[in-house]
Length: 186
Length: 175
Image (cartoon, rainbow over all chains, first blue to last red; front, side, top):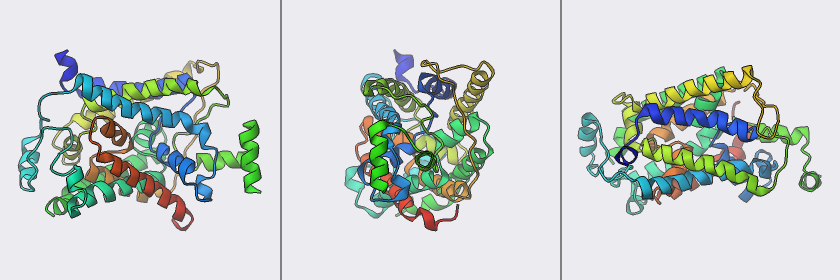
């Protein structure tokens, strides 16, 4: 049980995630991808007569069942297999974060930044609301996210997906190292 | 005109080529299956999602800390996860193609070529920014809410708003 409760190593998690690709293909000819679910939600709830959202979203309803499952899986993992110990953080990162007043490593996301009470602070707003907007806009503009491009796209050896994946990484490296420190210092 | 077309699709479930074009636009994952099933057939995707969500939480892929360590090259963990997932994915797809594996319903498994668009560069960079700020990509957003970080529901709503805004201004953007 302790083995299940402690954080799982990459060589267990990575192959399991990779197996999602053949499993979804075999159980119903579905290509693995998650960000499209955001588009289906728009098409279902607020199509607003925009051509981009005028399609038969019910044909993709499997994708909404899939993400609902991810949400449930998050709940199950936390309630049954939750790790009682604080998250282990690299010492360099811990030192840097303490400079921004982030010292609580008890939960999987830093409670000092991601909480309802900090939502309306400038830092909280940028990190939760503006950050979320970039995810939604960026993934659709790029035509996929880490699952669709980095995993499904690379698995089928598509070079546009390699371009997208490299851009995800470059964007993330620029943000984390050179822009995020200013946001965290707010 | 448009309304009639939508009604037709709803009535007989037949999709026009134009409809398919729209549905496949800017998407990696489109439903290739031509079959229609009762709604409860979708529950199997929920089961896969649950397994996936558990792995996300237990390997701390949804952790803001792990994402920061990845982008600061302080930990191999996330590179190991993504790298080994891709290796397993490549081998699986090769085997499916080589052995002409069919779905459990007997359908032929299809793969589509993806066209290059500059959106993959601009959008990719923008998503990278969002990924590093929030420490989450779209999958982890759902898992985080389930795991009890309820405030991430706001981030998810904002991501939906971002997708909607993209749809709104799509024609004005370079592609």
